[in-house]
Amino acid sequence: MLRKVLYEISKSRLYSPSNIAKELNISEALVEDAIGQLIRMGYVSQDETSPTCDTKCSSCAYSSVCNTVTIKTLSITSKGKTLLEREASMV
Image (cartoon, rainbow, N blue to C red; front, side, top):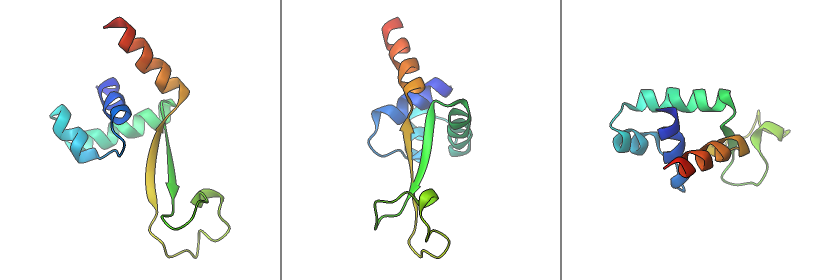
């Protein structure tokens, strides 16, 4: 199931737990748990950014006083890409 969630993340430009849940016919909570596991396992990285600047919030000196809404993004790591490529070659 983790591989299926990883694949769904890889094929969409904007990830949405609700869309992934619908596509895989599972709950959003299960998708969120899977994403958390993929992050911990190093297949996906998560970043938080502000819609009004190019600086990552985690490295911004003003992050504690910033009033913008952060956007969480997911990126598939090289480890995740390798897994997806290996899966694709097996099909």
